[in-house]
Image (tube, rainbow, N blue to C red; front, side, top):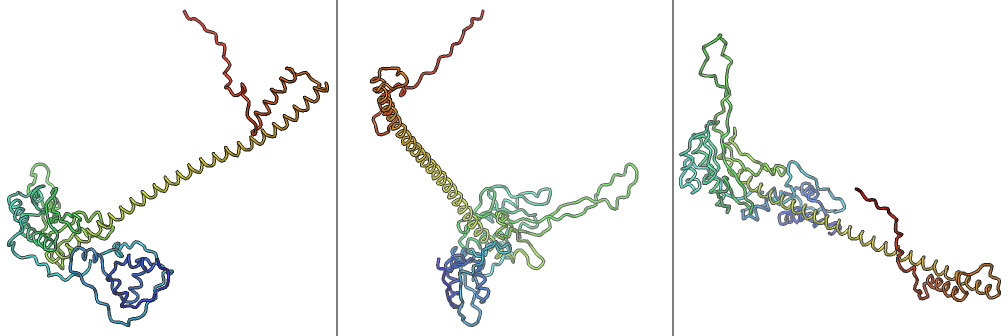
Length: 402
């Protein structure tokens, strides 16, 4: 990585920002993605928003934001002044490849369901023939039907919305299919499930039946809670709840300002955002697994180095001990030979103050053998000491039991 200060014009940096993802470009300059983003903000250089690169890779017709008018000043990029990359709760995908405005036709939900998709037609036949449950909703079966859970009154509208979503996804190259009781699409090779449901509202209801037996009680304040369909529809991305940390939206509902029919584009952008988040999470997990394996490899390598060092240490310690022992034995053999020479001299001159256990010649040969056994430079004569001494037998009395 080049750590030198670089000079670049405002226009040149703008072009680079739209040609290379921020994280990659920041590394080229020796900066963090946050540091480079601050420079762009300072000089009024627009950047691709979340999902731009993913949408571009997915075949979307994306476009650049224009560079605002201004002097084409020279920008000094100093990698020694480096901003640390931090987690941004408001935009956790900032800095990663991410969505951008696209040149696409407005998405319109028709007032009538004409030429429905085969999945829509099949689901309409199934749901129309089902009875509502105790809450007033029609529950779709687990197979062969779109994920639509609405009241009978909201069914036609829900089918029109889902049909529009399906056709829009397929128009953009994302197939829609049914699997495991879910409606699924695949964006950037990431399977995502979604569905549409109707919110329930809780109302206070006065009991219709009154118990006229017994003592009289006031019943003006006696009510029971009743849950019923509200007519408000909601599109849901089921996987989004697993990616909230990436800023993924899960629900799109009817609002005071806009009906759900006017939010289909935002919903499909949400599907793309979830796909990007899934890819990013998989990358993070893969990187975490790689680091885990690398840490384990380092620990094992460190263990091998410690074992090898210990082996070398013990081998060296044994060599030193042997060296010292041999030098001491050599010195002892020299002293012993001097002692034997003195004994021989005194025995010859009959000045030896003690008697030997064997004849002088035989005893001197035995004694010189012991000196040779100590001397590391002399051949070691055989000795009974080379053998292992048997253990002393212990006398044990045995007793008979009657």
